[in-house]
Image (cartoon, rainbow, N blue to C red; front, side):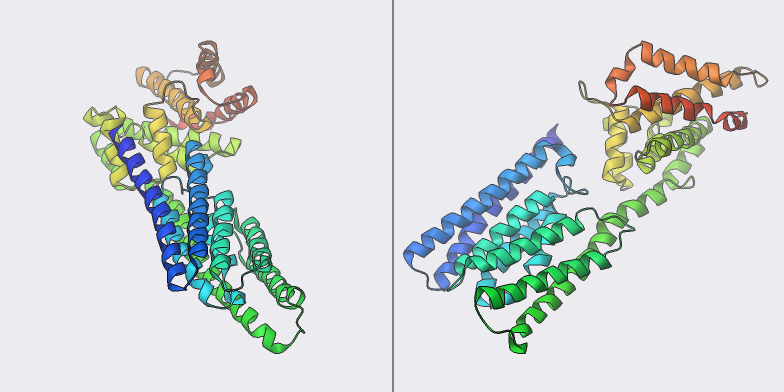
Length: 403
C-alpha cells in the first residue's frame, strides 16, 4: 500500500511539473518573441488549457489500469513525461522556423506510442496549436496539414509487434505528409508549383523519415523485443532461479515443470498469453522451499530477476488475488493445470502401479470447481472452460510420462 501511495505521489508531481513548465515556457518564448501583452496572456492561458486536457486524459486512462495505455506505458509514466517535456520545447522553437519544416507527423507517433492513440492525438494537436500561436502569421492550413497527417500515422503505427513490417506504414505516412505539404503550399497559399516550393517539403519528409526510423527501431528493441527476450530467458528450465528450486526441492521443481507444460498448452489452445502463463506456472511456488508463500515475501524474487510487468501481475493475481476482482483466464489455466498435476503426482507417489482413469479424474476436478462456484471468480465462459477440459484430456500420454 505504501508503494502504491508513493507511486501516486510521484505521478502527481510529474503532472504538476508538466502543467507549470508548459505555461512558463510558452510565456518565456512569447516574451522573447516580443509578443503583445494580450498575446502573452492568450498564449499562456491556451497552453495551460492544453496541458490540463492532456493531464486529464492521462488520469482518465490511468483509472482504467494497464488497459488504458498502449504497451507497458501504464507502468512507465516517465516515458510519456520525457517526450511531452521535449515537445513543449520543440513546439515553441518551431515557431522560429518555416512551418513547412515541422516534423510533427513523426513526433505525434512518438507521443502516441509512449501513451495511447487518443492521448497522442490530443497532445500532438495541442503542440501544433502552440506552434501556430507563436508564429508571426500562423493559420488554419498548418493545423489541417499536421493534424491530418498525425491521425493517419497514429492509425498505421498503433499495433506494433515484434514481427510488424514497418516499411509500408512508413511509406504511406510519408506519402500522406507529402500530399498535404504540397496541398498547403500550393492550394492554401495560391502559389505556382515549382522546384523551389518543394525544397522545404522534401527536407520535412527526410527529417520525418529519420525520426521515425530511429524511434521505431529503439521502440522495437527496448520496449517490444525486450519483454519477449526476457521471457525466453526466464522460461528456460536452466534459468538460475528455477535451477535453485531444483536444488532445494526436486518435487516442487518437477511440479512446476509439468504444470507449466499443461498451462502453456491450454493458453495456446485458447489464444491467451502463453508466455506469461508459462512464467506463472514455473515461479508461483518459488518461495515454498523457504517457507515464503505470501506475496510480500516472494515479490522480491521477481523484481530482482527483472520479470516482465505482465508476468509479475499474473503472479500477484495467482498468489494473492484481489478480493472482489475477477481473475484472468491465464490464472485459471495455471490453477487447473497445477491441480491436475498435483493430483496425478500424489496418486503415483502413493502407488507407482496405480491405474488412473485420467478422463474421470479431470472431470471430477473441473466439475468440483464448477460446483463450488469457483468459476464465478474468473473471467471465463463455459465454452472456454469446456475447451480447457478437452485440452487437459488430450494429454494422457504426457500423464503417463509422470511415472
